[in-house]
Amino acid sequence: MVIQGNKILTPSQEIVYPESDGKPMAENTLQARWIIMLYNNLHGLFRDQDVFIAADLFWYPVEGDPNTKVAPDVMVAFDRPTGDRGSYKQWEEEGIAPQVVFEVISPSNTVVEMLDKLKFYSEYGVSEFILLDPKKNEFKAFIAKDHKLIHANQSSQAWHSPKLGIGFQVIEGVLTALYADGTPMKTFDQIMAEKAAAEEAEKIALAEVERLKAKLRELGENPG
Image: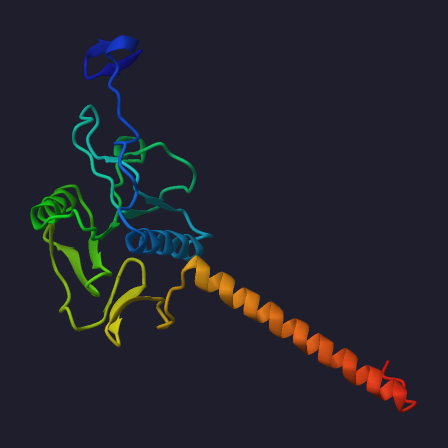
């Protein structure tokens, strides 16, 4: 049983806040790769802090209104503990709205849909909204000013998030996400490929050391 205002709701009357809309997280591999890259890199960046990061999770800003919701591709809420959630119910999060949200453009997205999301994020307290289009290698950043999200970058220039410290830039025609020091973010595949290359280099180096030791032994030396 729950109480809404002065009204007591029985279990059959309790408000349901759905945790899924039945739609996939992404419509193609490019969009999925960007969502996963942002999610994983942000988790690594803020791993020792109270920062909640989620991908494709419903955010309900208004208690008692399950119809007012949105599922950003990635969202970041500072001063909120990490951990699993079925949805982000703002009234259960000390009233804190996600400060930063990302949307990665997919083929089905329309200009009207993105404008509606911009309006939603502006109305419910988002500080930064980053709209990414990796297919066109473009991005738009919006920051809050006077309780309204306004355009913060020119398409050809680099932009760094005041909240996150990370940046975005089109480098040699390719949209790139950057750490504060200018290092590009990496996908899981890139990280694993570099790890495999490092392991192979280490094996080659060890083999060379053993070859040299064997040569020294042939010459009557003790390589230790």
